[in-house]
Image (cartoon, rainbow, N blue to C red):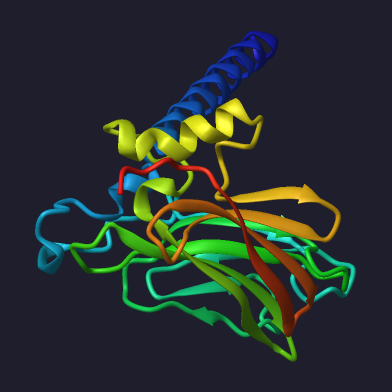
Length: 229
């Protein structure tokens, strides 16, 4: 009789474990479904006054890298008003506004000092299609912007083009074998290419040599967008 009870108890325990595992998997699937794409930062693009922070912990951008160059990786998380790390010794990077960023990318060590640089584009409360693409580096116990270039919002990664004008840079990258997931285009060691908006209004390649965290050399490369003047 005791053996029978023990056998039944074992069966009950096994069934309970299976049920709990199924519940756990279901919960994980539900969490995956709740993760929102970057386009959900704003709900109504025609009315910036109504924009709200619609992200949750699951949908925030998270990247890993050695930001302070000490040989150890740490995480960097996107919040509504700042970028912050799981390493409490790293000072957070305060963002303009309260809508976070369109994307957050670890660009690797661009200046050869051992620490990784990041790139992002802030979400602004305005009606303009223009924005600024920025590269930041951690130095002297704080984040420092080392480069910026003017771009269109539709040039940022993961944007879904709606017309020929918006798809131009995406098509150009595809034809020239560049990454579709980045605005920044690495050319070769020490040189960075960025598709930006030239002062004459055309698209052009801007070439940047990042020498160190406080010094860059910049020049415009070829114009890549024909325009009827």
